[in-house]
Image 1 (spheres, rainbow, N blue to C red):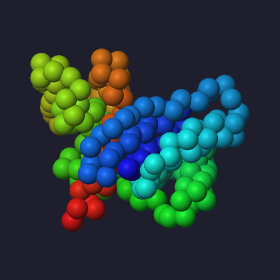
Image 2: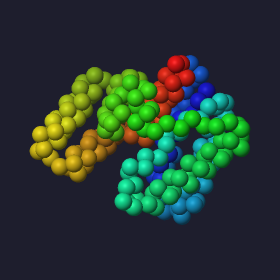
Image 3: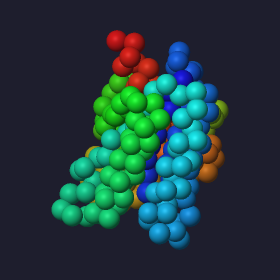
Image 4: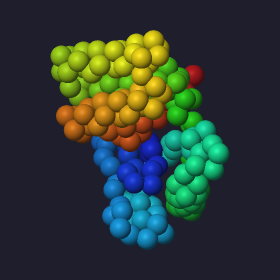
Length: 199
């Protein structure tokens, strides 16, 4: 069995797959945002450690450094780096083997998704692949995504407006399916790992 983690400062998505690549379970770990960051980290790491039972491989999404250009969100980067380090430490301490780490773009390509696609597009792909919603809902979300991409390409909306509206679509998809970007990313990691190890 393998465990896939999309680590986050606010909500960590995880999924478990059988050795033959069947999705078995997925959920979120959401620490209390009022906790001191170190207690949040402790909470998340302990919840992840509970998931190690019967797991042979750990797959983690690497930190996307481009998000932190120019010193923005340095606190978030620092937290994610500490969280990833703590998870890697506990995994090695328990299993004495290295985790597999994929960048988001790398995992998407290995899964058969465009590496630079938006989070909502990843959610739509996962939902379609695993049958989490009916075709009419998927067609509606794809239509919205296509319209937004068209407006952006035609310079009718700014990059900030595009990102904001795609973010709203992502939240709608999450509310209707409970497949948020965090869970979707963890599932993509699982598919990437399966495809990578089959090569």
